[in-house]
Amino acid sequence: MLIHPEEILETIQMLKMEHLDIRTVTMGINLLDCSHPDVNILNKNIYNKITTYARDLVKTTEDVQNLYGIPIINKRISVTPIAVVAGSCKTPDLVSIAKTMDKAAEAVGVDFIGGFGALVHKGFTKADLKLINSIPEALACTNKVCSSVNVATTKAGINMDAVALLGRIIKETAELTRKADGIGCAKLVVFANAPEDNPFMAGAFHGIGEPDCVINVGVSGPGVVNAAVRELENPDLGEIAETIKKTAFKITRMGEMVGREVSRRMDVDFGVIDLSLAPTPAIGDSVAAILEAMGLERCGTHGTTAALALLNDAVKKGGSMASSSVGGLSGAFIPISEDAGIIRAVEDGSLSLEKLEAMTSVCSVGLDMVAVPGDTLASTISAIIADEMAIGMVNKKTTAVRIIPVPGKDVGDHVEFGGLLGSAPVMQVNPFSSKNFIGRGGRIPASIQALTN
Image (cartoon, rainbow, N blue to C red; front, side, top):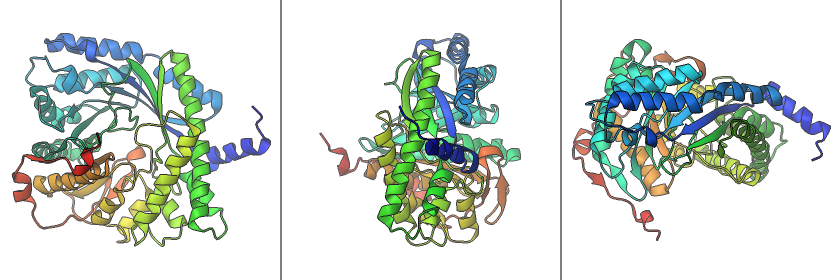
């Protein structure tokens, strides 16, 4: 394959000046064969399998990073949802399994391990309830463990009993991690239509339909897209879309090259390339900055949802041309605390929680890393989740909520999480009650869009 000098220079520019990186290489590991009624044997099996399969993950990833000169920011593991793995376990709670996962993640040197989760969109098993009720303590006593619960699908509707329960679980998790501003909630995601091959935390888990072990890659690149759009001279929106498609193509090819080399060296399957634009707190490495480069004075103003729809569609089209293995979430993330442009929009009063919800109808995921007042009612948190689940159910897309009621803080305060999690202004929530609605429980039936057969 002929590589032109200008392509080499362009890649160097993307890496050095525009924050291009591989956000994560995530190894998915099937734990179904670890199941055992005795929790001590189960924990031993889980630890041994994770540390065996992922023993060389960090070293291999770093070797590939050095080979290509492409920064790989996080190395992660996802496992089979623990509520499934622990279905026959007789222990009254599953906190010890979270501790085992944390210990295994520490042993192999990865940044995070996901899969302490459950799939409850049509109802609960006993193991599901044990797991969900274990989440607050599990996330408070571990450093690397991430949790997710899928409460809705287009086919099944929304399990409102689960939604109500998780509002209380999120509040309890915030209180147990009060000294760290409720950071336990940053490791918990509530999903509709959760994908089985998502490499991004906190929502990653290894799906039932996946092979025994697989490598999934999540790329980044909002800084690259932002720079490409800003270089255009008075473009129309069609020209902007074409530029984003071409840029996403290049980013995706680079990500797949890294993923396939890691999987080849580790002799495991290559799964998917998730081409989501995942921002960082760095100035310019921002999804909001791309929207503003299109002509919006500030992210959140009228036209923002349309601009985000253009961006998300162009990213998917460019990425799908570059790879036949696109999966995961694949689109644009809009996490409040991790995007400097979105933080500024909230601080300037341009972006409200309601506008953010509207944007999630056309972006990759949902309400992500949203800090709200610590005294926000559990029923209000549940209602916010329910709204987002409805968007996912009706639109046949993945949506999610990662919300943090910050203990002791109110609207206008800031919370610092550090690292890629960044910082966030505490956002205002609607003061009127949803308690009676959430208290009704039951299931919101699947929408008519479910009838596809």
